[in-house]
Length: 212
Image (cartoon, rainbow, N blue to C red; front, side):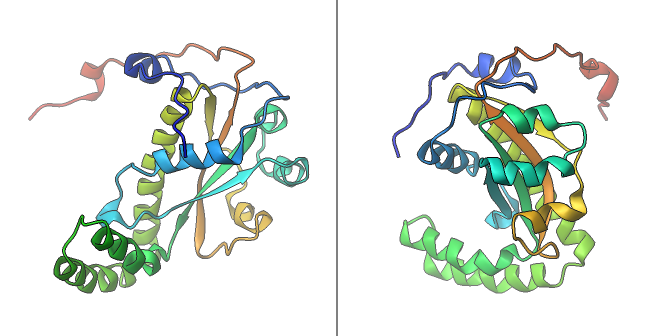
């Protein structure tokens, strides 16, 4: 896929980001570019590289209509965005562990014996997690990918809004996912901004940091 970056200014991408809630309704992002942005976002780190993030891109009017009742006060984003990206954590992500590590060997990034040693230790370790422990792992890792996707989107000329206000117990089912396996982490609206977003404040680093 061809890289479609339109902005490579780290400072502008990172420090000028705002949550945008209204987009150009006529603008659609191609599947090629959406996949490119998601691929770039998945360069984010994850625990033992299990990559538990899963993405569902809701872009059709029909699917957006199904989503709308579940997103509470976030309907403007749903109505105007190019897409709503639903980010889930896969509670059985370790099932792809062998595929991931085999790819690392095939690309010369890991010796086969290291792969075998790692998988022998990691897979049983993950399988023995409680549901609460696994929930914590996949949500942390998927959140790292979500933040990276927001910054990647800006580099591509788009804006986003991270959304946590939704009916979590119903989200997986409306996109035909097993709700026991796939836990919702957040929703990102994405598109060409039609507003600049609101300025906001942050507490000073001295207020929230302790040195020991």
